Amino acid sequence: MSKLARLRSGKAPRVLDLFAGCGGLSLGFHSAGFEIVGAVEHDPDAARSHGLNFHPGKDAHAKAIDITETGPDELARTLELGETSQAVDIIIGGPPCQAFARVGRPKLREVDAHPEAFRRDPRARLYQEYLHYVEAFKPVAVLMENVPDVLNHGGQNLAEEICEVLEDKGYIAGYTLLNASYYGVPQMRERMFLMAYRRDAVDQIVFPKPTHWVQLPSGYEGSRAVALKFLKKDGLLEDAFDYIAPPEAKPDLSPAVTARQALGDLPRIDARKEMAEGRLKRGARRFDQLIPYGHASKLSDYANTMRSWPGFEAGNALSDHVIRFLPRDYPLFARLEPGDQYPQAFAQAKVMFEEALQKLAAQSKPLKEGSAAYEALRKSIVPPYDPGKFPNKWRKMWADAPARTLMAHLGKDSYSHIHYDHAQARTISVREAARLQSFPDGFAFSGTMNPAFRQIGNAVPPLMAKAIATQMAATLMQESQESDYGHYKAAGALQASA
Image (cartoon, rainbow, N blue to C red; front, side):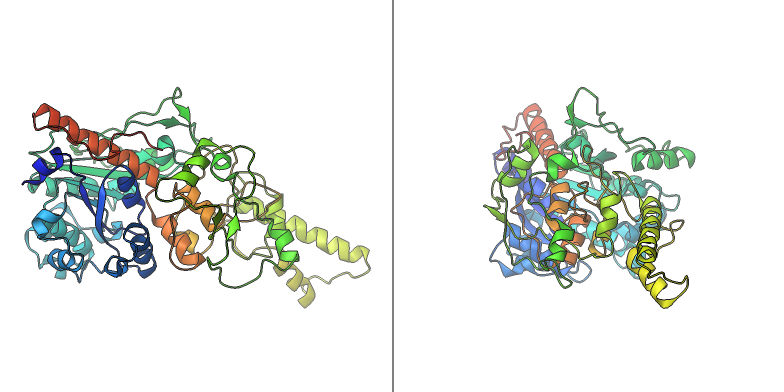
């Protein structure tokens, strides 16, 4: 039975997730009725997270895999997928964009045509391995995700070049830029998405229509405008035959989900109070302590979705609602206004330092400028970074707007997302970061706080992925009906996003 015949008989599409991380794309496809048969991820914590959530109790699915050392046939044997060429219907994921840096169009074709070429140009190796998996597993469809910069990476339109290689392999392909806030995610996250289908399966590329709308903040151009500006400037857009303009989000759609709607029902963490009472201390933040939800007078639709996502319910308590220990900065966070960034924080910290000096002087304990005590006090209040060099290092969220993009840098600090609530005066917790990415409350992250933050920041928002998966299912169904092959009925594939 061919893959197309199998799908059109009603079988759920089998998905392999490459560069899977903890599984944001996987969760979206799983929730749209697809079967996640395996994943490739080199980070041990992320690999354990993926296995824990999608293949609990199966050790082979929770082990880190280096795609440069594990070929398709070996993966198929390890995960017991059967014959490689028949094991997978769809491949999703996306190699890191650094793998493509300065690898021109002729070089990409050389790498694809000659398997050993990557040894002469290691920058292309992850790309070559991705294509190797596509060649071996022969999926009906492919989805790739990456940052908008791939549309002009050193003067190259890498998305266009990837489409050309896939088209040489018998696929039709297209790419666009989508913003997560237009698909029910409480985050203004802009990413490039590339779809490809076998020509005998589909004859057009369709991206999902937005379900939500938001007026982006004043001065916020968005990476979409920047990326397209570069394309036009360098003449890349005229040559971008596979570029598809993104579906338009209009004001008559549902309002975008806000940070307050996403986080407002979660248990409060009063950082200053907990620190004073000794409940918040320095040290690793582990997920071994349950925090009850507590009472919420009314749940937003989004919060209810995060609590009740089928198969990923958290029960009555959370285990990862933990924050960083930042004793110097909690009082400063309380003084910041929504939208304030590091320059405003630095200026406010200097005011607080002057207030502290005046208080000591009033107590007849003046400090001499430049003294050890003076410098120690300053260090305890004022952050050390130059505001001219780090203008975007900090940001206090707006309550009534989607959050800005979460980055993998959350694994090092979370100052980019300071909680909007002045009283709580802290950066967001691991669970709050997960909520802003649209991970349901029952989705588990392996490791301690820092690895969990990194996994979340690296992920594709599951609701964004679900919208794309649903559209891909609808595209396959439409082609099926038009070609009189029957009906495509992947469970839940055509349901609206939760």
